[in-house]
Length: 198
Image 1 (cartoon, helix red, strand yellow):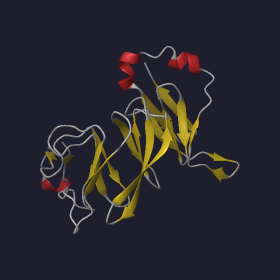
Image 2 (cartoon, helix red, strand yellow):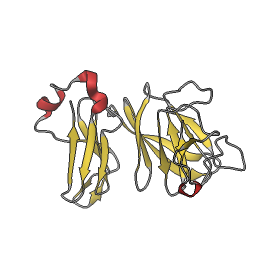
Image 3 (cartoon, helix red, strand yellow):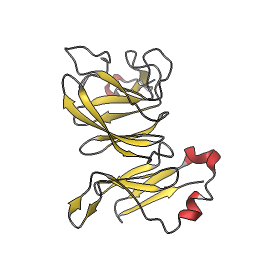
Image 4 (cartoon, helix red, strand yellow):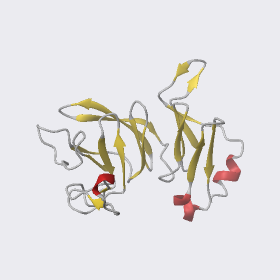
């Protein structure tokens, strides 16, 4: 479920939003529209691993799409499930196990547009991505990747593999039974990005 907590309510606990999808794999807030976006969501209480749903603008109590609101849903067409999602300055990125998708606000009637940014560059675990200096980095199943890379003043919106001089130490010795524990850590003070992996 998706929970909310109001600091002015004097309640010490969060409450589930009753109108929100009851089962989700994860969620984030789309900005600047202020919409909760749930992924691996549901209409029936059974998780659809490729379903994305979002609430109305600034109203987390409205999740059913109607002509009078901006709530809605979209089911990705590739992959076996959404692994993670991240809101970037210009769009949201959604990773399946196989691909990277962009989610951009386009307004009514469709609200969001979805496009594949890269294929064969899926995310290895839900916390294996980070953003540093306007560039998004992530760890795939067999490679590190980035998008939004700036080279000689030219910004690329495509996916680029990162060179990794210790590739064999990382990917050939990776404990495949514990990849869900992989975490990306961003140190913006020193311009560093790190992955902790089993």
